Image (cartoon, rainbow, N blue to C red; front, side, top):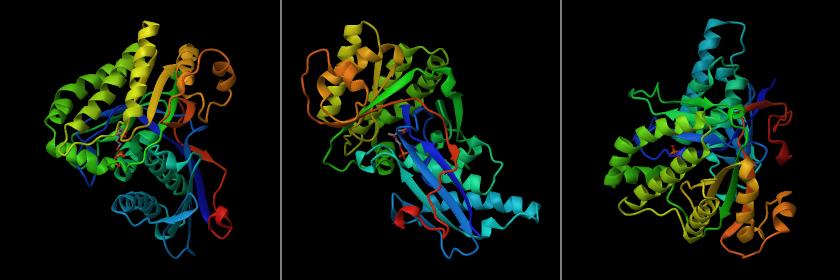
Length: 381
Ligand code: DP6
């Protein structure tokens, strides 16, 4: 007897960055953050969680390879989910004792992991929602977000679609550090994103250790969390609720820049932007200058890839400007005919592909399963 459930979960890209922990074990942040959930048509993780009295150990297969579940973060998530299931079982004798069985988890991304896009957020969000579905937990999305947070901070925001806030909370046990919806996808469905995947040879400082170095050593960081983020958090929520693109965009760009400034202010300094990233910043600056209003916003996480937000109403202006320099790389899909035929071409190097996407929904239950009748990954057959 195998019990199973499958869920897909999205990637989210912060517009107000999470950078800094006040508690490393519980993954409690030093500031609140805001993100946009991206469409799962282009970027998503599909996870099947299964359990059976016949399984001998907990096991995870990620993109066809066996991976360890034996990390403190993953163990913390599994422990919480089993506890919640166990509470249900203790109240209702008729329920199968799933909390006592081992888990087989199979997970796949629909985008190349090598692209260096934040896959851990979608990965933990899919893992937590698939097990919650398997266990039939009545838990709210915000409560599940507290479990996902222990896996990876930014993962808590992938439990909602649209516009999402991670409220930092003040309690020492983290019970009020959770994700909440600011506005659903339907509020502003015309928001789009173009991701420029920037080629990079060097290994970035992992975000977990990078942010700890910043907390320990940057003076600018103190100013950021005390004086800048609280004000920006309210302003950005307001801009989203009013669908005020220029205000939303300016705050997004300023916050990306300040995040990279506190990285540079860390000791020894951390650099995530490279020359291509900086060239893209200049390109967006020029685009907005020429348009005489802010029609595009760049943002960069702990790596050189650019995410450019824009409203569909300005799509032709924004994509034509990007196409002029990066039209020769993969990923333009149907947009190629539209932006490729007109205008001059001035090829720039440094970008390996574009991903044209839009804002999307939160985790979705699906009937698509990644495991076979033996409880093993289908693609390993
Ligand atoms: C720059 O969520 O990957 O993308 O909590 O240590 O797993 P851990 O860190 P992670 O950090 C993300 C940092 C960021 C900004 C953001 O997504 O808010």
